[in-house]
Length: 356
Length: 281
Image 1 (spheres, rainbow over the protein chains, first blue to last red):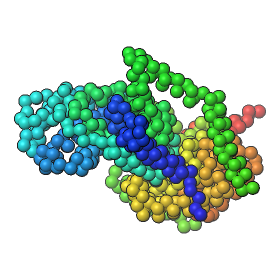
Image 2: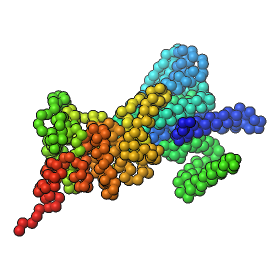
Image 3: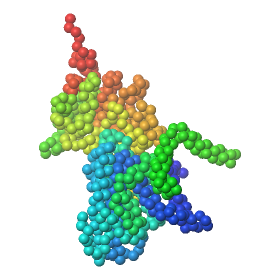
Image 4: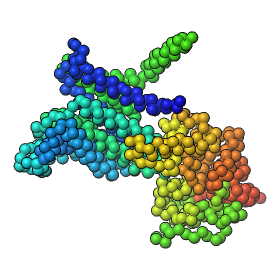
């Protein structure tokens, strides 16, 4: 029998984790088991959780795998969200596409495409920079997108799409009303689609990492000079990671935009970028499974902390700091390793006992 | 400029540091009047060197003589401000490091530069990057080309590792290898890019006499097996005098002597560069 490699096994666990979590949530949502039904507040969080998981995975591709710090990923999310909202309304208005699932998929793909184009435009100049400079420029990009979106007006009039900059006098039904954000979006986003997006993202990112291109991306992260000396095209692979990441962000953004009847551009500010970065750092830089878990838990956490009322964000910050300290404490890590080792060792001895 | 980028005819003048080594008079590398200036300082000046196919050449000199700078010029880490470099008869003017590598120069580094977080096998696979290719989309969607080429890479990597007896370490992270093994892995990675000229920057640094002995055998073995030329910088004179067919001595950025080991050992200029001038009277 062919030996299954360590990475294949690890990827399999990641997929299994997501699928099991989805099934569990579905049971919880539908209330299959009597007395075990999700509360309304948490139910509203299901799509955002999916969106943030996808955001965390895609940011991890840039921060963890490609080794560049990007602080502007909310910008790509914003591009995706507004593109998605316009695309969905346009498909309904111009093509009378009633099928919600199909409309959602196309809107997400369009959001991904436009965000990818934004990624290319940002990436070409920015990826020549290194380290801190890259972080600063991506941060500026996020702010620029936010402010540009604040001045954009989209309207739909009898299947025709009107666009204006800084000019609210457009005919027909407003889709994006400048600083007021998207208006009257039909909320077609669903938890099932969120789950599908997570799986697609995982397939794309994990397969990319474990391929020739992914190895090149990681080699450039590990040692740029050596990577050049063996003939790797640095710019090409940095762009590949950045644009793939921005496209995925755009898709997540589209899903997010179609989950609320109104989303304003200021939602996708610096704080959102940092929030996603926190998921990545807490889950472990370069660790995809960690990002998923961190994104899910930290999206729910503020909801669970609601009873602290005004002190909610304070407690949230304290929890973050404690988790960081705890996971970086060598003694605690050793203890965890010991426990894990004992559990595994225990299983092993049990098996041996069975054999005997 | 257009003249320069054209492929030049193979020169008919004597080639190689030691002319008789290069029997077919078709050098791998021909650097003429090569030089670089850092703000008025001539780090390397009027550097002329011809290396024949399958020649093992040594580049020696006191510290700060500009040996590594020569390597950086040849691999276009620095763009030379003077002179030309012909690689297999082709002018490398305007090429960058990546293109020079694709045209046949591979190198190792004085301070080891491996992809530390990746496994030994993956390091070799990165070396094979431009040899066994498939696109990003075949990788993401796991198309048949992905499986075919991954298999080829997976089969080729142990072959390369076995040259220096490293095949048992394929799954170990490169950063956790012992020092000597890291140096060897760097050579294997460079070889994986299918070069015609291998540049080794102090390959024996930090090795004990036994390891150095093994390294000498390995360099000759690599030359014979791959039929490539090797240019090495080294301070270990046993290694240089033992395996280099031609030796070039550099001091203050200028070549002060060229020749065989015996010629270099008895050259008064070289002795002076290393040991200083004997006091008169």
